[in-house]
Image (cartoon, rainbow, N blue to C red; front, side, top):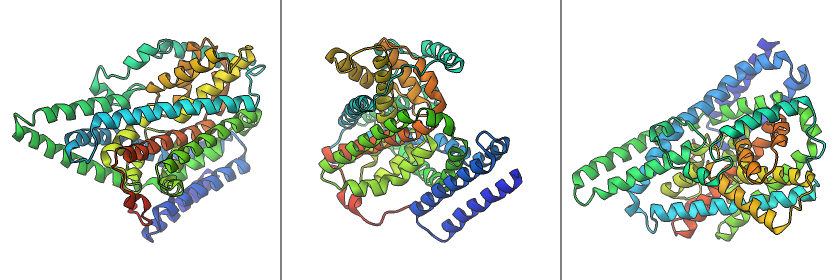
Length: 459
């Protein structure tokens, strides 16, 4: 049976290859991959049953495509961030109204504010759905998970100290950050690259020859990296097919139904926050419908892959080519947004958990002291989120102890993490893209002709 399943997968991959050779649009190929992945994954689970060895062995092979694609994206993330940010700083004078400091401050402020809004929406959504942790944490499995999380919480820097959380953003070893090691690796590379660019600009006045040499080297490196990005992005439909097959075939529907009320409430909060994103786009004087159409393929990838950091190349490419955001702003918003102020993982999720636990403990959620403290803690804690799957768990392990709340519920919800993390990651990436559009509009650098163009260059 496994051989038959693999033959079916090979056929589906060939369909996407044929569409590419037939010059079908990139968007249609991505959505075809998404649809085929859902149908194939659901069919596997219906045919063999959830947790079947046949499904496990099949996914072991079919996931090579998805895992390989995500690995390629993560491979180019750090080089892309480095050359994009460094080039943006070095060539800053070519921009009409922007400086790297102004861009950074607007983006970070926007992300933190929207993270706070996401936390507020999640709080009231939890109350509307009467979510509570009472009676949920009881089995031996959940107790074991809680004990493991207690050990993990004690090992996370800044878990009970917001000052440490802030300081940890600064990379003590930039070369370690370049390897992607640690929760703050992405933002660490952003900071280091920006400093390199600033240092290069400072030698311009007294050593113009060296400045021009470095400038040409950075710009040439950016050309090479962007071509590499284009090559990898061409594989997106194949990656989406494989990733969605895994999600549909391996989801634990029993656990999801057990905690169905929480799953529904989470997606209601995520959708409401996504509508806030569209409202902010509309307030910028541009069409939210166009934003939705042009960003949809990026959001689909974020939903299927559960990695904000892995979506950075797609994010930057979409902002620059489809939304008219300058490369300097797009690079900064996509990179910083993968770590700072994540609306889904850093805002919605820890707020909902805090409300559920506090309700079970008899704490008045809307009491000004508790409510304001919760929102502030969530915003500050979001400065060091992880841009990979599981980042929301880290955010919860930071917020809950600071609020004086137990973390046992986190262990229970790990069972349904994949289905929750898909929506949260899509919202994270949406927030980063909106930050880019809003920042470009604020500084007067948004190209509305590109934004409103019906035809865009696709991979």
